[in-house]
Length: 419
Picture 1 (cartoon, rainbow, N blue to C red):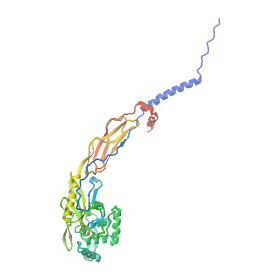
Picture 2: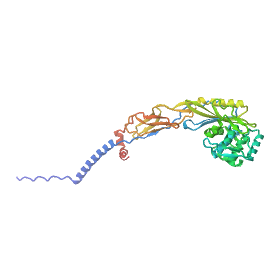
Picture 3: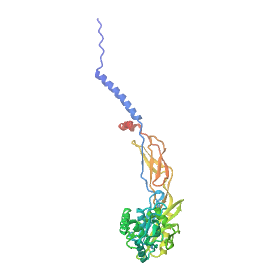
Picture 4: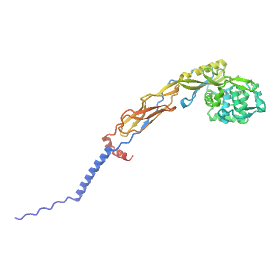
């Protein structure tokens, strides 16, 4: 019996070999991809500041003068913040009387400023200035005696106008500054328009004309401008001024030096009554604070003074140091793409000097944090005015993305390698 030759070994089809190779490659790629997804470094998460809720503070309790037609007060901006003001009573425009001189001085100084302690320009008076003196006498207004050829300084005329309320001095100042009364009227109209004093009209420089009018809201804002001008503030603070031909003329403000009042301007017109502007400064919580007051349309001088004193004294209790941001206040939020979140909170109180309910806003600056970051300092919260800050830290851990989220969001996770 003869033996049979062994069968030839079967050869694997090339297509099968290819498929097996591709499967191995795919498995390796899948494992590598999964590994890449699972270990991709999560990006840092930026904090988003939350909207600052205004602090709830008590409103000012103001003793408005019932005997007046209108009134207003202003507070010079605290710690670099904006001025605060409020008006009461009639919002109509009323005669300014001699308070108009204050507005005229501001208009003139805007065009011809006086620097530092300078006396300003030297002005030679002429026959027109002598005629203005005669008109002031006929109007029964205070005067500063002048003569043709007399030389005075710009600051002389400012002081005589605001301290003694000399009607001819303010006319001479306006006439010198703008050439004539038409030029003054145009400059005054442009100035009031530029500053938004829609109720204020200067029909004459001195306020002797009842058509020179303003409202309590406008005059309150003008008063704040006046105390911001160093020349005007220094002038209205003078107790007296020396006028050639008269001697020492006292300030017409009868309550200067009382109740911390250190400046102001009076005004009286028969067809209207009395107006009074004053400013006062007082130390509160170790800081000097300045206020202004406006009273319009009173009759008796004593009544006017008492109304103003009552108004100002009612303002001082509204100055205080208040906590604007409490410890634990949420100032920013971190929200990761994978759903984890944490908050950033202030770790100390943030206090501010305030007047009544005029609370400053605040804003937070925070740094991005890494996934898995434990609570840590991340920035600060700062008031809109002043330089006080409070530290900020995260309140809890920012959980990292888990494996399931990474796998189900693989395209996004892989993109982290290229961010």
